[in-house]
Image (cartoon, rainbow, N blue to C red; front, top):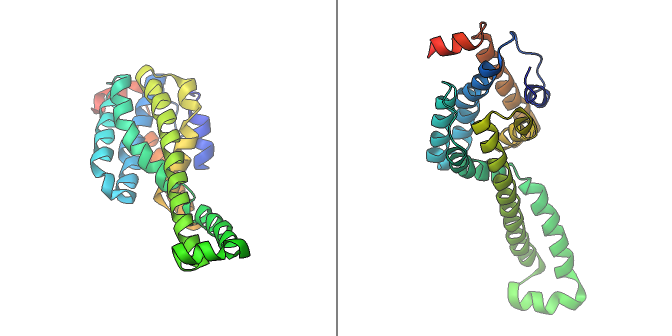
Length: 217
């Protein structure tokens, strides 16, 4: 079993795959799962990023045939998608609420009321303004940092089929994709089940390992 499979199965809360595959077949399984299960879900969740998702999906489809791709190709394709994924996965509502409460306390302080009234009208208007600006900036910073780091690591893992590099990030990316596709806890559980069922289904179609993958395509 490749080093990355265990972390992925744990995040998806699913059991072992139905059949053992050889090393190359496991990589092709991962790429096919991305192309046929993960990215279609992201395409529905991020319709404004359809072109970027489609570009990445095609690269995964190629890799599922054994055409690894180069680091630069993967990084260019992963970057825009992961930026959108991490931006959507950011806990915006809770961060906004915290920023709003902090700003409201500031606006209601006696020493600040005159300035707040002159520039914003009242403390609630100031709190909304501050919370939106602050949360937008924090969400973008979170997405930019995580997308940059993850896209480089994943690109290298895919291009060189580096199991350890993939293992270090595959679970976190699966979790981020789940959060990007759903907001509520029940919805996230349902998406996680879809991701897990999709992985099990793809694996069940390839009982003989590498030769089946090659002959199928």
